[in-house]
Length: 148
Image 1 (cartoon, rainbow, N blue to C red):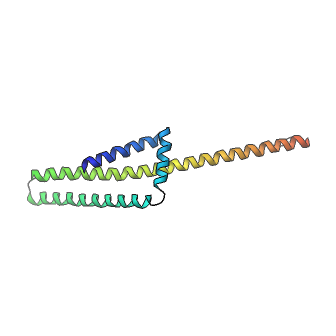
Image 2 (tube, rainbow, N blue to C red):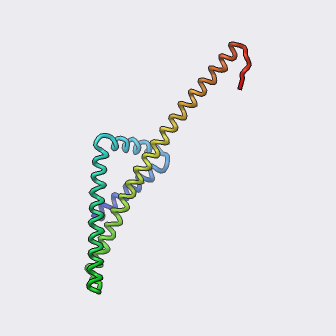
């Protein structure tokens, strides 16, 4: 499971880097995330995240059990040390992957908002430019000087 979590983390870091910088791949990733967030995608994503959260909680419970067992015995068992290190690595990888999933979600949201604001700004500029040119044309036809 640890190799799978490392692979997941590397993929998430790659997604974050792709979303962080403007490049042609970013457009594809944003479109892919848009498609993923439509239909049943959010339900599947939330289910996977909830499952990972439950596994994370179970791992944390196991860690506390191992710590308690070591405290009660008074000596450190080498087997418990290995189990503790394995569970700590697993818990940290699960926690990091959940956090990076949230980071990817927020980056996607902000990129979509920025693109929407840019489109609105462009349409406002076009309208403003069109209104200004029509005012100039009307003022030139009537022979009145422009008033600012």
